Length: 91
Image (tube, rainbow, N blue to C red; front, side, top):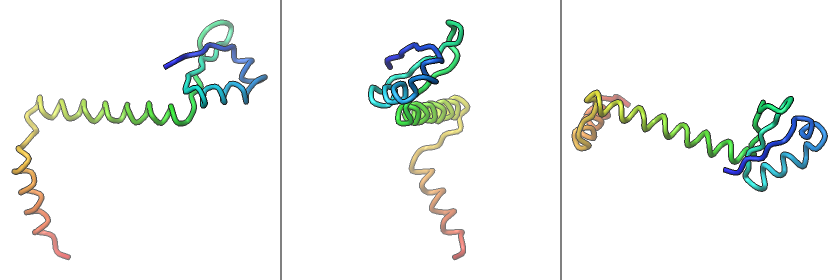
């Protein structure tokens, strides 16, 4: 991902330009205060993409832990167990 660095005063003075650039160019803009990184601005689409990827990575990590801990079963066995539980339900 492309990152741009801008002083925080540009956000105040050129808000529309800064956010449009983030959105249209799919970039992150790092805002600085006194020359040091302080905050990041992302377009909503890019933010959602990052959050979706993070959620997927969390799910994969949990699945890997299940495998390491032996909390897995063959697919057919799992389907049979689900069918039995559905059969036990009263509608």
